[in-house]
Length: 349
Image (tube, rainbow, N blue to C red; front, top):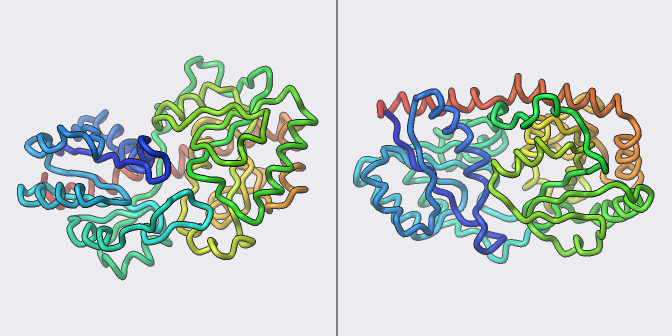
């Protein structure tokens, strides 16, 4: 039987906070497989002093994204004991975008060492897979997925019931993920919430410098992934906003092509209609006016799209249903589970 440890790394932008990559990418799949009786697993923080004792229990360890010297030492020790290592990568780990709060450059030597040590390397999308092949020709696409059933609202009849007063939701880690369009987004938010003082903006994530100018914003610091998703599911949100730099942020365009539409999957699974910047990752996943609104990063587009969502109940309900169905049918956790099961079968753990 597979006995796995998911090593949860620390955030590189918020001191003391966990990185969400392991939760978003791996533990959802492990939960699904565990509930089917196909494995057992535990999550360990990378700075947990009890970590080494788990090596006698596990036969697979999952590592995510950025690694430290301590993690590499752990991996080397694990491999000496015959434990298999899966290294999962969900963006371009060799650089950071210009908008990031990251204070130092990634340690490419440590990442290179991890790529060499891993028994399997999994990646989040086709763009990463294409360019990671020069480092690991055997890298495997592990699709982004949602364990949709976990996040059904507490009240069966409350799936699409909207809160009063009306609420808008915004999830974001790190700083705002745009440069050229940042000021017009902030101006559009100011105007919309001035026009509609009854509305509240719930923000979940990492503080960013501009948030203190948004008096209508209710801030909740980064929470465990499951807690965030359950808050979304039970929040009665009218709609969500998801800004991301597009072609206008030419210096970050390549990096952004390696990103993933996690927000669309989150909002689709929790039946929240979303407004998304027309950046490549959302153009590839969102159908305009069917599963979300896709907009260019201009003041007029942001303001008009929020006004449209606020005024058109039928559009909101249609997007809720369509996005949920898309995530359930095309981005369900069963697809990621099949990929991991195939990897495990090769090792006969």
